[in-house]
Length: 378
Image (cartoon, rainbow, N blue to C red):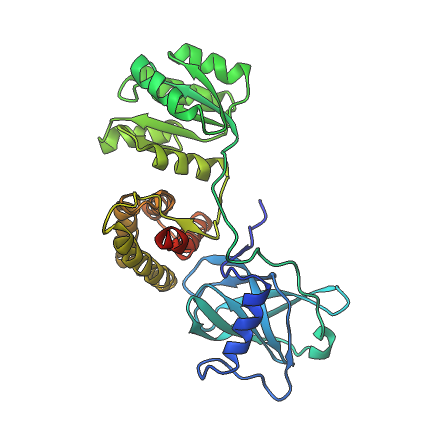
């Protein structure tokens, strides 16, 4: 069984962390440090939460204070009261200590920051954690964060030569190593002969040969992502292809930025981005629309967090559909891709670890959407 991935849900650099702590001391909604408590300035504390209605979440949190029976941490997600928690604390000498407890309270104190008070199962000595070292924090907000080149080898299996040439042209400047195959046999030979980190599969999935080739690829032990490149929209045909081994589908005609975002996700590049800026053209009126959309998406993050925690499936599905349909239009291709993956997880039913991951990724993506003020100022 693979180990769960603990990830930050609140992205702060050193100065932002300390500024937030100072603000919380003046915010009425924030919990004051108890008389028997101590300031606890550790970051990237592993926290696992078992939700009352099923499912787990795993995140890295920022500490605020600690007392004999409680610890207060900061995160970017909502958690239900009475959720069972496990926390790995760092002592002042660097030793690790696992403690267990439950969520006593969770408050939105400084959007998107949630303050979680965890009531510990057994008393601890908070003096053991005084002066705990602060781990290296994220780069300052002003630093340029870009997608960069996607690296890896991609096999393009496409029998229609005009489509093959166009796709090869589009991928030429992306940093990917591109190999081609135009028939089912050549596709299988290419899989046997050389490593491919992903396959863009354009063979006819409405045909038995196309489905059989998918099955044979998996039978040969190929476990990397297979992305269908297809004009097919028939649900039965697409479901048959997924059962045969396809990972995801890209509808023709494809949008290049959306295709690249899907490849990034499946190849493991750019996961949990700290910032996502719009690629929409800077035409008159568009910056103002993007600004309004960014505000909507940031609100949607909290709504998705709440609806998933409360298992409001219909409302959650509607939010995912809205983001799937709107992200590309506003230049946020990554948002559309992440919403698509969340919808796929919802279709499988839940809760489940896969759904926890997909919804968590969507929430992170929503909170990473930023307004590019530098472009606006220019």
